Image 1 (cartoon, rainbow, N blue to C red):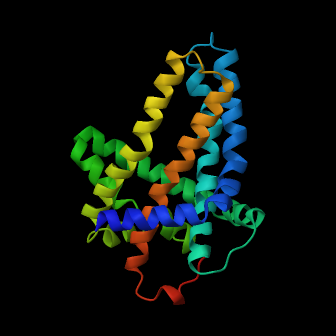
Image 2: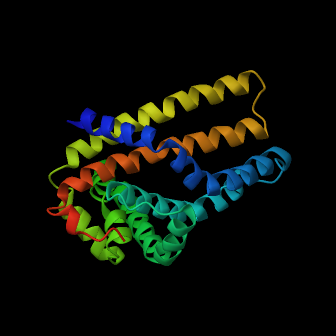
Image 3: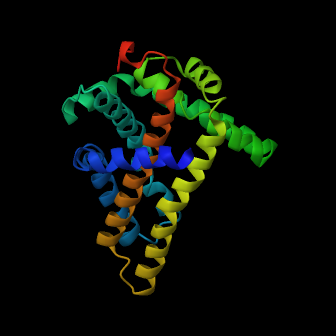
Length: 225
């Protein structure tokens, strides 16, 4: 079952490859250029890598929101322009930020207890951003709805996360080591590496949305945003 959902996610990913590159790349590429230039030319500053990651962390909720809106609109055959997705995303940004803050606190609390509670929280949180973005639910309400909706699918979500993480991270780890050993780790390769890695990471969002769609009794009657 999990592999079928992953196959569906991969099909959607391939079919919408160019629009996804335009949608996500418009933010990813500039912040990754900033990151690459910063860590390459200002390496002497202590913890510069963490400071250089701040723009990436700031834009993540924005392009993630636009991504969710895009996936929903494609499913409903109501595709709009990239500019319109980001205009809508800006209106929904603060609730999503609140949701991510809540999930981070919950995840850290789970880690303090033990690793298992943290994994459970991560899995049960999987649908929260869909409720927040597509149905304008407040962070706490979105979290509650996700907790209830993922109950039946938690095993599939967890196994899918592990498989997708391995498939989209191991090749990049190998590539990074290879480039470093060949002394090819420069601003250009850094930008390409982090942009591609972030781009393939959206497979997990597509996978989660595929399962989320099963929880909707009447998808055709739901407002996409």
